[in-house]
Image (cartoon, rainbow, N blue to C red; front, side, top):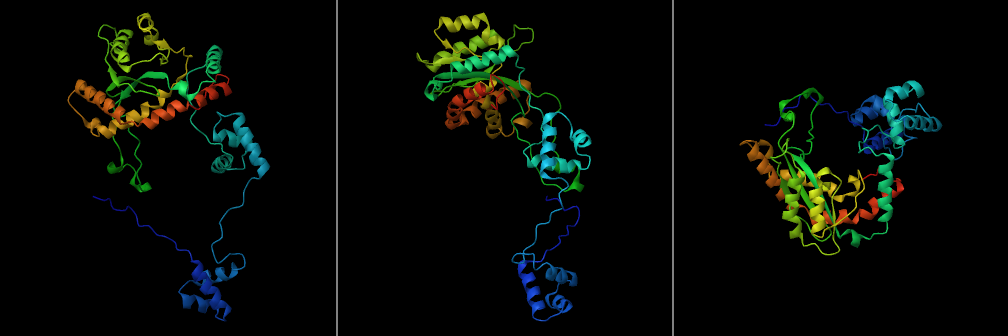
Length: 357
């Protein structure tokens, strides 16, 4: 049932330009302000103010209401400079040291006018000098590659998909008096939910299946090990019909670099791309995982309420990942491959450092 409004809402009406024109017309033709007010059913103060403001209004439209600024252009520039000089300071600290005569809301507004906002600090893998050097060296070696060359790379990776991880946050309209109305609160599970580890790969010419990687019963933690990874490669890579120009890309995870994996790839003639450390921004498949997680809710809307035990739910989650992968449009993969020259250029501009990708 629709919820009833919590409090009555009163709206103040502003005079229209047409009504203002009638007031001005009546006044000019000799009617007193009180007579004009009675004739047009408006207050005397409205008539008085309308006549007073006639000379400064254009076509009887409302003037923009703006308070005088408490700071000028040069000071605003100084404020921005001080904020960027110590980016981890709080608004309160910036106010105390630089602009005690301005409120914190005003300071935020001045900074926004110059494109500066307070944001959660971005987290990325720690890049040491030798990591940056390796990333830059790799980018310089591949800076002349064309999109057609990048299409011959088979990009691969694993991703942990947790139930609920792809669901977007819901936005609702509510009055401030409604507080924690149960109809407007979304309950979420506490702690970690059921998850599966999936692997996939794509190039400019083909797309693998999504494979769910089981835990290794022989390992102490029963997680995904090099043995599990190698079994998956043996199953999937031969079916992808590699040609002589195709290069297989995997990152530097321990299970990828294990001797049994590297030896099998070499013995079976797979060309490997030399991959720089800590470079998820250079692997376009990283941008596929969130659309895949989102798609889980499209193909299996009741996944969050599914019951039947952890094994049953994990099986359903893995199946939903496979179906979601099949719904992803080819345009997504084509655009990701086409972005590789820009990614390489971004690494070069950053001298091996962080990029927007």
